[in-house]
Amino acid sequence: MSNISNVSLSQATALERSLNVTAHNLANANTAGYKTIVPLYESVGHEVSGEEVSFVLDRGTYLDLKDGALVPTGNPLDIALTGEGWLSFQLENGETGYSRHGRLVVDVDGQLKTSAGRPLLDAGGGPVVLPDDVGQNVSITNGGTITDPEGAILGTIGVLTIEQGARMLPLGGGMYQLPEDAAAPQQSTNAQIKQGFVEGSNVEAVLEMTRLIDIQRAYENSVKLMNEDDNLTKTSIQRLGRTG
Amino acid sequence: MKALGIAATGMLAQQTNVDVIANNIANANTTGFKSGRAAFQDLIYQSMHNAGALTSEEGTARPVGTDVGLGVQAAGVIRHNTQGGLIQTENQLDIAIEGRGYFVVNRPDGSLAYTRDGNFQLSAEGQLVTLNGYEVEPAIVVPELTKSVEINQEGVVMAFVENDPVPVELGQITFSTFLNDAGLKPVGDNLLEATTASGEAVEATPGSPGIGITRQGYLENSNVNIVQQITDLISAQRAYEMNSKAIETADQIMQTTNQIK
Image (tube, rainbow over all chains, first blue to last red; front, top):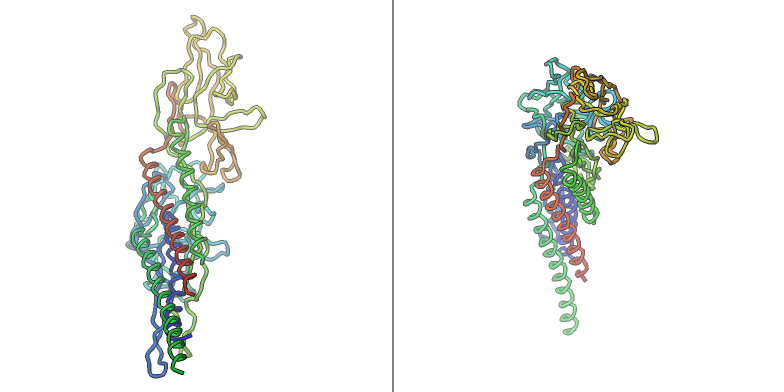
């Protein structure tokens, strides 16, 4: 294959992967606390017989961490975060996962958990337990303090900030993990909890739809380029064959 | 081409969403009904390139990985246990609960079920029963020739029999409460069953601290917010359409691929 076909192939492969990412974003357009994944491209250049050739490489993906829209639910155990901050949960393997998904339930022991059963952690890293007689009649302040109807403090939800540029690894189920070399998360100062709200997905449907169109047209271009290259080779063989 | 499967999970999730919304709207006028909401979660991710992998001998590393997610799944339907509006019916056997608690119903098979629907009637024997004829627990039997029944906020039922000006106390309606109301399993007929997730039923007297009170002559309407349901329905439909567009794009890309030769 010539360089032309190889360059087009690198583009087509990158586009296919980015279609998968866009489909995943669209599938999660209504998932509470979901953060958009954005693909990154890079050109990898090298010199072939005096000619500069650049291939396309999908270098990676990153999370777009901007806030999703707040959706009012009226459920006292739904909490949404605004600003830079994360809720922390205990994962099945005992490690800490971070999430913006604040749709909580209480289990039989009064412990606050996600609907998938991962316990919410308080400011000290322990579980949050609501007493029997309180049930779901709780108020949660902006700072995460949980009080019963009489105003007695039952616990404080941990709201953490993660250092800028840390690579959050998506685990699925709305959970993200921090890499081992990242600095320990600190108590957040600017994030606020809103009780009775859920943070919607931050997927911008219009953007993703235009990305779908872009991907499709760019893919068509790259296939066209491959065909042109093929035709070029075919024509040269025919012409050169005739003179010879 | 994973996009086809990913978009299919999105369409399936939106179908579940529409099912739940349709059930909410259908029960907008069902006594004691609590609206549900489908909760979604993103599926696992496949790492095509790992973040942190070394890119040179000098120790430079990839700052980002390529994580391709596999779509979305419905994680469950969460019931919203907020108070529904009270509607005055002036029927002396209609009871609404204002606050926490469930009526206890004795089913024909001997098991207990729980309900917020206080649309009670009398059986042939004068016992307080639900619209399906299931006995309310504890049993309240209204004697013959009763002129009127009074139920106070603590659930104490009194009957004025014949011309006697002094009421006869028939018993007290008690509630059951659960630590995790959302864990109760709906079984239809406005009834809920206890599960391991909801915890054991705890008996409570109406009017005690933190527990609801009984309101005679009222019924609790559903807590379905119709406007919210309709807007949710619109966004579910649009999300479904967007996922179908992703499938269309994947299809057309494969078609283009077939034209390479």
